[in-house]
Length: 200
Image (cartoon, rainbow, N blue to C red; front, side, top):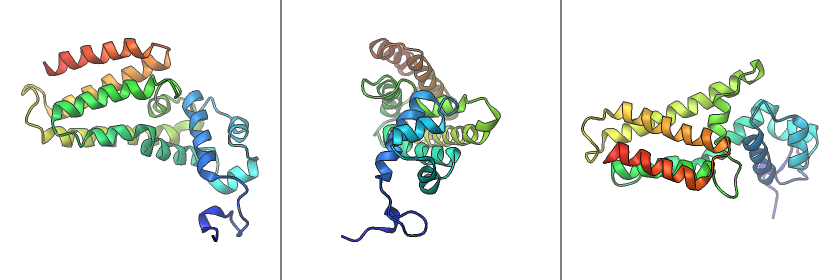
């Protein structure tokens, strides 16, 4: 089978590594250590490539992170978009909050949320990364607001925009607690309590 252009480096030279597998390894490093806590050496070691190959295939660290963030949203973080397809507003909210626990306190994934960690990146070199993460969060909240505007089964005293902001605040709080080491069972109890307070 002929190689696709995606499997070639600039100039037509074939890659000697699996780009998708390398991105997955970069995702795990960024997720575990955060953008600022991850060095190029951390990335090249985990990805099994040298710096010239990294730059040629993925760009600089910031560009690589953009690709990793997109992969995160389409992979581990895809539950957020899938939750919007739930048949009722109540189920949407339940799936988002329970999904936050499953993602950020999973047994086989780093603790916390890549997006939430990136929003809190504070150094001047991480400004663009932080802005990208903030944009992702705003887009997700806006999509949730639009979905809640269509729901007719939620408590009438909630404005869709306020409820969307509250759900994201709870989910972000779960991610922060998970990153601090709080266990999954305890976070499930927190999620269940929050859902009872919101929806009962």
